[in-house]
Image 1: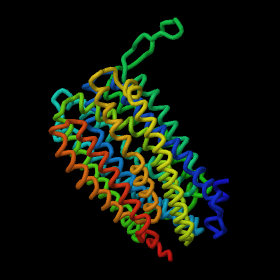
Image 2 (image 1 turned 180 degrees about the vertical axis):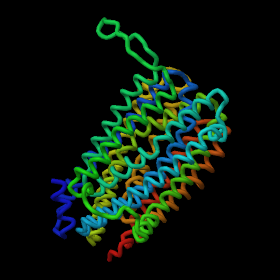
Image 3 (image 1 turned 135 degrees about the vertical axis):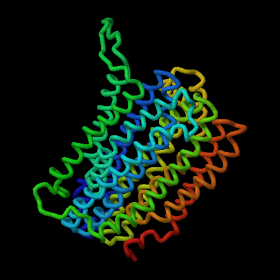
Image 4 (image 1 turned 90 degrees about the vertical axis):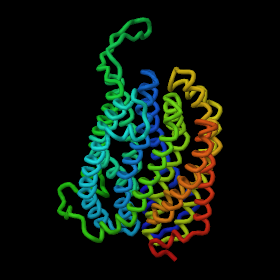
Length: 470
């Protein structure tokens, strides 16, 4: 059904409001499930490590913003090419889409190797630069080193997944992301903890384990990425009816035109992610002097909050595909209609989840750590942030809309201005007196401000002109 409705976009056929809503739901649902499963993976990771102790949790929490930075750079590199693929499919140019995919493979592999070298070289000085305590620096460095070694795998996972989504295939990337989460739990179960006895319905069973702790958490995640990413790449190159390039002739050397377009789309996103994550790292440096409990609670709360906002990113993925293909087909009114539907859906879902997050905050934090002090701080963080979720949804989905249009420069500037001028300034002012609560009040205020300015640009901006729509 989804492919039939997408074909209507490409051929210029009329879509009723019901069909638009149905297509939005069909593309959003698997993407939402994938995003939720992804954050459940991080939730379980954090919970497993949290039961080792506050130091282990803090060592991973200290590096969280740095892992987001590199992940954001890889995602931007993939998006620079996948948006071109969405436009090509919207215009009915299937062979052009395949050509872009071939060129993207080469460019992304080279880029990921560069990031691997950079990441491993920074792994040991970075925790100290972030202000980490001497008791957690070694574990933090080990965790980030292993994380960086899997960059090429993660990059190809991002690329294959984004290509499939922009071709209209949401189900396969979503299923494989869920598989990755499942594998991560299994690998972590055996790698993090030592051999131990567990009781199941009255029987004591010996469970083997390697007892690697933080190292085990990093290896478990990397191995899960390796398996799921390998299958994702194989499916995109071999099995996908729209993208398959296996056995076909074509040039894998990126052309100047393709690279130029990828840079125009991806570079503003990469710069934004770099400076944005730099701001997050700056926030981490503000939190670090507050102690290991604050670092751990901040990390746990960010992971738990993701359960609320990841559906927004799922809808944003669908918005990128719908807007990208509508723009490629030259349909301005349909583009704006899909944009509104996606944004309203994101706000509605995340508002409901925000209410649930506020109500169940004690239970959520109780699952993540048995330490009372960390639980109390985490509950405070979640309940403060709940008030920001509706406007956070607006900014997330609107950004996905702009990416689908190829309009990434101005939204990137808006994101950066918001976090640096509002969040960082408020956090620096409030943290000395209010501690971790001040940091999260600053975050709440900034996300509300960001959502408002994105809605204003959505309503009054000229973002549909990126592909010459009139």
